[in-house]
Length: 461
Length: 126
Image (cartoon, rainbow over all chains, first blue to last red):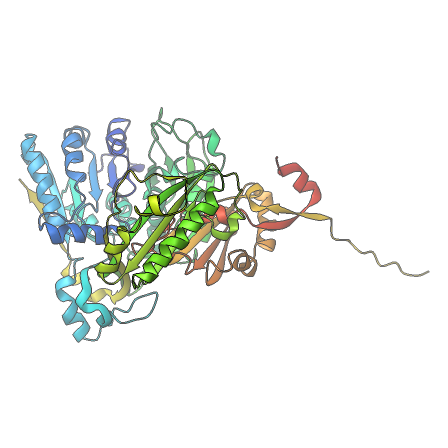
């Protein structure tokens, strides 16, 4: 059954987010032996973006890049026996799975490719029923009940764990396409399937969760965005994305293909471990709770880090729900001011702009001014800017519930060029765009409301 | 004979920016930014744990965040800080350049802590 050597299962990360390096999954498949290609496309904000696209086109709503990618690598996957787990399905996993099948047919591989479709995470149609039966779906940050914004909700998806992925793999799926499955579940699924571990072996769940967390952001674990000794990280034009070699005892090695750039070191893995971390003693997923204070790391060769000692606890009775709702509008305008006294000129321009917005009687939920080159990333910690700065970018953002004030703001940037402080340029991009703001509402729900609705279909062309 | 009380005087220290003692990575969860602070050498961890306290980090970021929580990971020689209300609403609502808190990491590395002079002399460049 297992095409591994019986000792390790090799799960390779192909994408760390929707928009990641397109060559990475191709190189993971062709650059050396792997068993699974894991592709995470969903960040917190991604579901809202996909929902926006689906509201314009009912056939959209998934990571479109995934389909041409499959077109490029399906023949290699079939030839090498590499299977794929991906949450590329977004808010339309069926559309995504059918597009992959169509590709398989076009490539003349119809009977050779089975697509596992995981659904049931989407609870948009069930919200009113759930609220009526007493589920408040309160915002985890503010405590407000969902009923406050019910009419503005655009999408609602529960985070599923590894169980449906294990089921799809057991059913023979070569490519598993899901909606809102956790990033870590995409790695846990293959490892649990291959080793036949029990889903209540909590230390094993925790170990697989940590493995998934390490590779879910792609090259961010293998030299990309690495701060420690960044000048010494070589070959980032062709970075090796991380690969987990999981062992039956629950330990694993993080590595990358030979001959690729970047680095896998205790430093690179540690920086990724602390990324987006909350309480390290309880990293909660639908599959269990991992204790990050038990992780032991050891450099075990060039570009090899051994990870062991991980403990975990039982899964909680609750699942997280990711809800996207329409909030309003925003726009960001920029202008560049040149030496001398660039910062003072940009500040003066900001005052002029704000006065005009007041005089026009426009009201905003927020107006935020940043001076790129002086304080945009570190705020007042940047200290007083030098009067000799070569240039400063004035960057003003506004947001409002109504479109009108934001639309008018976008017409108030260009006039500053001829009616404001001097030495200004950088307006080649034209008027800034008004963007719709689709906001994120995290909530919790009893898993017994979700799990009976989860479906796994094995599709064949 | 009068008993002499031997005092161990605190060694002389000088303020040193965390950039010489630690590396860091940050990210977001809603309107909260997290910063993982990792000792550049295992030997520095104890110093970080003693000096980089939640109240001091809150003071460093005053006006930029509402409150700070700290968690310890001695196994990774790392501290994890949660900076609440740091992202102007976070996610897609935020108007900030750094809406996802990606560079709060280096903003923390600007913070200064007292470091024994001998160590400071060895690690601070430029």
